Image 1 (cartoon, one colour):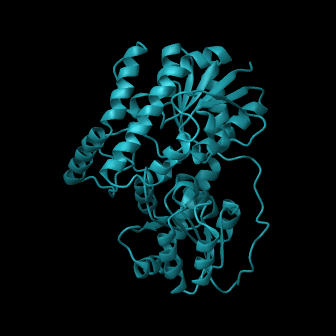
Image 2: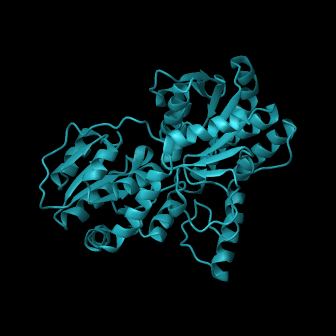
Image 3: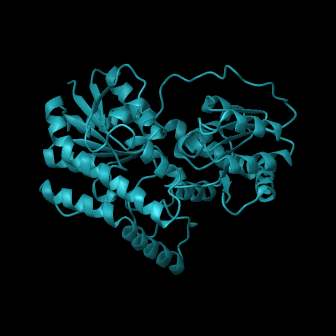
Length: 419
């Protein structure tokens, strides 16, 4: 039976792109899919099959999204972090207030809710609609003995590790107090049981993650309805139409810091210097974060090609290593391509991704703030010279390929809606 499915997610391009791939798959099966958010978030959708309905016209006027993206890309010190959390709270508050009416007016039957936006799960549960939670980033499901994804800790089982994880969790909850109060207030207003954290707003029907179990830290308490499906991607793959002439005798390094972090010119310069010391061929994707003058500067200092966007999967299949901020999309694509990673985590769940990459043996981590170009050169040299990464990459790459991806996620959504 065809259903009208709503999608609620943070207004970030990587989240919208992953969920659009899932939405397209559901539309092709006969369903209708509508994303709901502030008007400016519609820019992240480019599928003619998927609809968009704007909410929050008063509280989130034109220009609000650009401000949110600036805060997310570089919150700065404690004051900037407080502004970012206040902004997240403001958006959750708006969605909790405006979604109930919008869902009724649109005739939404069920919801797909990004784990990083609590409003979707709260409103769906209160209205009695079935909903599926999707982890486009690392899952927020908490478990004793594991560090939160936002914390830069290595994995360990010692008593010291356990104390560190527990204390850092308390610190995180204190930092997120404003957002937690917003969630708690709307849970009460909607007549739901008390809750305040993102991990308390997840679906009891089905939870989907873009990761695979082999990349995760050892978990014991995931619910039975949690599914690792691997990356959510469109079925069609883009071609590398403007590939530069690359020498077969020199390694190829691909560097990308993602959509929100592509403005970090100084870090890109450090990466260029690190690669120049190794005589490798560096390709840089800045996702529109750099201007033409900065592109030319990186080319003058040794990069082979600098552009806003590469067809990532095609480039990774040619690269001998990738330097990444630890965005989950890049990491999962690198696993499919069997490309070892040097992860420089900058924000959000990226420290947790870096921990998992190193724990799984598919790459190394470095500090974007402390490590200079010589340290980066040494770690790149290890990636290119050590054969120990190949076996782990092959194992995890096969696991990702067998996880099911977008079609499997669509199956799960349909089953949750039927049940």
